[in-house]
Length: 478
Image 1 (cartoon, helix red, strand yellow):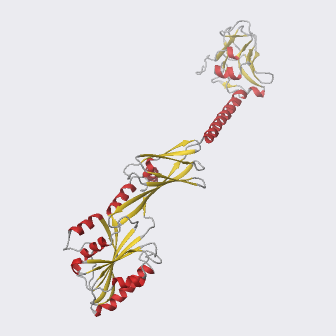
Image 2 (cartoon, helix red, strand yellow):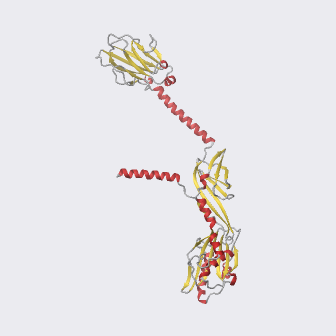
Image 3 (spheres, helix red, strand yellow):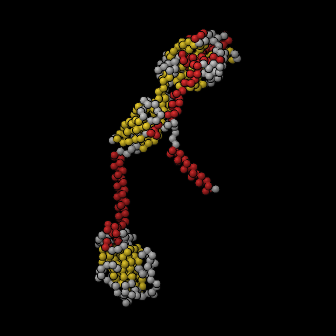
């Protein structure tokens, strides 16, 4: 059971790592702060006296909502000098609607109350026609407006259904508005009791094209197309914007170690921009694409599609030089350690003697040591006396060019010159074999010596005795 749980844990961890490396969150769509446009729809006829108290309460709630504490803000929702306020009266004969205040940015509380009075009952069947006509009458083409709100104040009739979509009167104008606009309804507010009641309906209106474009761009991960290339002390950021309206502007930022570099660029099909390189090797790239939308009714609005992701900055010339120096030093250090071990160690040299099952290593040359061994007395001339395994020829050429192998005069080097008792290591074969030149008649001893300089020497002292003669065999590694 524990093993099964362990396998599942490993599988889940692997999947999590893969997802973290492959999946990126979509870009964030932000609505920058800007002018708001409030369109208040009010009836043009005087209501019955039974509804006036409820209407006065609704009026106070409306003015408080705009000038004191808004629906989604702390403090005034209508900001004097920045936002726009329009008042449209409906129920004025054949004209249906009348624009009494148009996009006023400094409308006082008292002026608003005068503009929305008087009013009368509104038939629920015509409310959608009034809403669409009112929005059209208060149109603000080419004016910057970030948010548009329609406020309907009415006595006597509740309109809990969408004030832009009541059934029964689907006129061509309403179809056009509903096709181009996106409407978000807020809960209706009621004032008074029974039939003596007043209502405030609120809806936010947005350009449908703006919302669809923002969603499409947000899913594309705009930073995926960015590549960074070093250009001296600067970086060149190259993009390939696919599906983003050309001519729009964008702000690119790189947040490095304690500093932020920003640059503004204009989007084209293939774009590049140069900017200063921040400190560090890693940074967080942020791309804010500003999208502007012109609507003939709601005005000119802006959205910002923001995305960010960590990036690796190209290494500069100084960083590359430091890496090269570090690499060279690391290689040199490793080579030095290896050379020291090769020069001091004698693990390169192995000796086999008759009667021994395996070879043995000689003591390090730096120890100037002597190893002692015992074997049987040879029985015939030409019998194998010792086999010395030397390091590869390259190692000998690098570390043992001055080294010499010396042996007893009673021994003969196979393949070597006669009457010689010393040969340089570089001239010997990898497996150096020595045989008896003359069979000794009695027990005795002989020496083999490897010398590499004045104080670097390894000596093998071999004593041979009159022992039983076992079956002669050579080690497998020879």
